[in-house]
Amino acid sequence: MARVGHFDFSATDPAKLMPFYKDIFGWKFEKAGMPDMDYWLVSTGPDKEPGINGGMTKRFKDNSILNTIMVGNLDATLKKITSAGGKVTQPKGPIPGVGWYAQFTDPQDNSFGVLQADPSAK
Image (cartoon, rainbow, N blue to C red; front, side, top):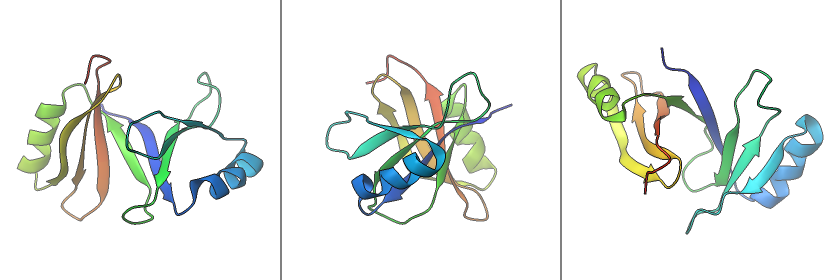
């Protein structure tokens, strides 16, 4: 069974929005160091507690929240998605040091990310 392992959301001005989440929920933000991308990792609490962490990026498309599902084999998962009527909207690509990532929409146009962990991804 595959679980949601990460969420993403965007902001018009991330630096101005971070205090909102810090003050209300105690979330911590750390610049991710991804070249050519304004992206911050979001820690929502201690790893030993239930829940997931996420990320925030400067808004470039829409203001939706994107949940990422962790999978063991991204290629096989993408084949299953397309065979079942889903559509790959962002092809497989590396997140260096993290894994292989893609995005898809289901047959009713809901968007998700899928991630295969692989620290050697480049």
